[in-house]
Image (cartoon, rainbow, N blue to C red; front, side):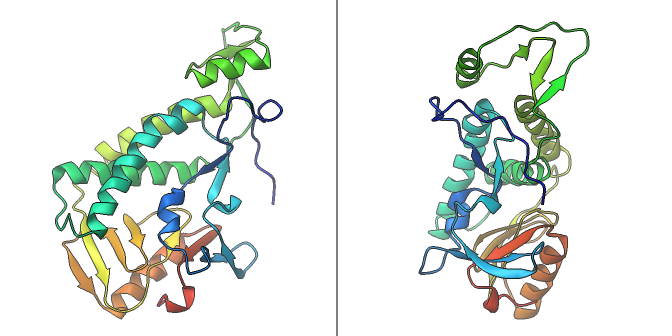
Length: 252
C-alpha cells in the first residue's frame, strides 16, 4: 500500500497541528469499543480481522486538510452532532425535527466527503498566473495556525489547505442538495449489531452498536433480517475496512 502524501510540520510540531485526522470522529468510534477499549475491525485489504483502538491510524487521514478546517467548520459540525447523539442515547430526543435534521445532514455530508478526500495527490498545487511569496517554514506555519491560506513562491498552494476549502464547499452542496428532502429516523436493532463503514454510501449513521440514524425512514425497532440487510449493504460498499463492537454479533 502506498503511504499517503502529507506535509510534515517542523520538528516537534511546535504549533500543535493535528496530523492524524479522523474521517469518522474518534468520539463516535469510542461508542463501539469493547471492555478492552477496542473495536472489532475487518481489514479488507489484508482479509483479516483485528482489534483497533479509536486512535488507530486506519481511521485517520494524514494532514489531508488544514488547521482552519480541522479546528473550524469541521469541529463545529462534529460538536453539534455529538451533542445531538448524546441526547438521543440519553432519551432526550425521540423525534428528529428540522433543527436536528440540519445537524445530521451536515455531519453525514462531512463524513461522506472526508472519506473520499482523505488522500492528497501532491504536497503542492501549481496555480497559473500567480507569483506568490517566499516564506520560511515558521512563517508558513504561523499563517496556517492563524487560519490564513497563502501561495508559496512560484504560485504554489499547499494541497491540504485547498483540500480543506474544497471539502467545506462540497459539504455545503451535499447537505443542501442530496439531503434536502432527507427524513432521518432513529432505528434500533432488536437482534444483532450494526457495522460502521470506512466510506458511507447509504445514508446510514450507526451511533451505537444497536442504534443508527437512517434515511429515509421513521423511528422503529428492526428485526434480525433487517439488520443483516443493512450490514450487507454497508459491507459491500466499504473499501478498506469496516468495524463494530463485536463482529460476531453482526448479522450478514
